[in-house]
Length: 386
Image 1 (cartoon, helix red, strand yellow):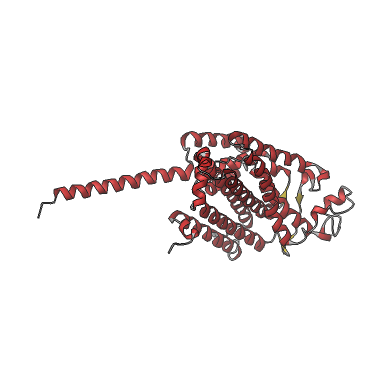
Image 2 (cartoon, one colour):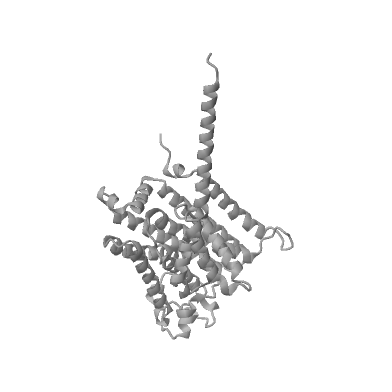
């Protein structure tokens, strides 16, 4: 009797990673809510929101590692799907403001009143319902990635050419969302959120719940990715990454596999963006910037391409460094540090942090097993015949 694909996907490192995430998702909110601010173990609310942002970035990195590390699709435009999911959630949050806005309009957001929009655009309909917003968080990035991938993969666009057109996609969306007549707040974007599901989005308990939800989403995303890469589908994806032409000659419809994993990855990025917005309190066109997508690829490279755990770890490590460097006298030098980090990792740690650790640990275990075998053989030879 064979076990389920999910059980087969959970090796020791995967189980450890999930247990660590569960511990973080439970302990951090409890330390924030139950302990008084005077306690040395108290976690301030601003740190809960900051770490929640890191977790959302980790989910984005996970989605990139799924397509780049296991299928060889280097997307330099995944920030677009992240931002689209964020805008979908932001539209829901804007509809919840109602008469509490500056202009007290029960239907139109403040920026629409300021810009003299006569009525709410049709594509804003339905966003006053949370379920509809959740559907759009997944559907909008999913449909865009499906249409984009349909034409790109069936045209057999690969390598650097695919990376360039994904970057062109996010740049085009940046320009579009900057326009005031596009109906998404223009340069200022969407902000001044009040409630989510009736709870004050700035409240301490809401922040803790959003953090726990983000950790849960990261766990689910990791389980989905791990199940895929550990299955026969994952073996086909790896073969596409390593030898696409040979895989096609064996009879596999390579474009269908690429389209599926690219669409799934975009949906995961959209979910990450949706969880990101209520925790940072704003979404604007700068999230579409191509530099953000490139930076996300650096997270994966630093943590370890093709490891999943490394991608999440790289996102947290790099963004923690960004927070540290950009909050003091070293702020002007952050981009130099980021660029140097990418170059050094590429030259000295091509497998990334986790990939390098796994490589040396594997060599250590092989050497240990070989030495144990040599000792056993020597003892067998030295043992006198009975």
